[in-house]
Length: 352
Image (cartoon, rainbow, N blue to C red; front, side):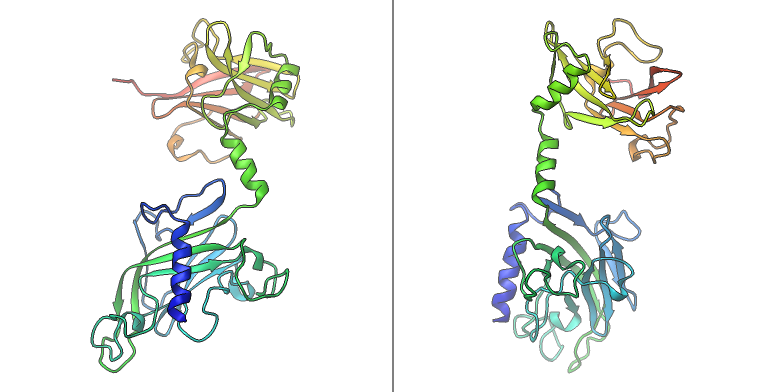
């Protein structure tokens, strides 16, 4: 029965992973978080000696490998500090009796008398450890809030930990082996809500909905001369470029007569600016730059710059700064200062 439960759980874990191997990529339907090394930079994470391993996720959960007498026990807590937090992996079968996949002990990998590797005589999970992640347990005493059943449900996720390598403290015949070093690869994945999934799918779509066309038409965009036409996602982004506290929207547009691409910025739903249809350069910024952009984002004053912009200085602005990029080639910023929209070049790499 134990092996059957573990096989079912392992199969479930593999079902959420591509057939090409163990990946940990989020999708519109699922969250996915890869457990990283400490300090970051290595392919795999490690824990050794009497230490425990903790990683706080962006949503506040805590992934933990807690030191036990014979190895480590895996837990995912719903918050820190973990003293009175709920373990979101507590519904991982088997709930009692045989070894649980979340316990990673040295004797799991050794034969009965600890004289060699486990070739099947010890009934214990091996390198791939699949476990249940139950977000529905948050805010409860560890039981499912809806019905109190100690069983996993359709809204639960699956995590996996793969043992890459390990060391034993006491490979002594007749004594249960204890693990004192563990190198591992681990991932947590769980379903998004229907609302969140729908929002992400919409955000990835290049198709403009009627409400967006109506918004920009009301702002002054001539839909006989221009059309909303996205070439990369997200198709629209919102910020506050002039710092007046009102939402400003940016959309990718195309001039119908000649197919020229550019960007329309609608400020507070009333004032329209078009970028990319210039006939002459503006300082260091060449004409038509906006129509060649491949990515964009807003950066608010005081925000930490993304890694690829680290080391560059952004000018003082009244509000958010719109960054337009040709990936690894050029970055131009659009900002509001001195009662007008201005542009500047952040970097431009000469192409071969």
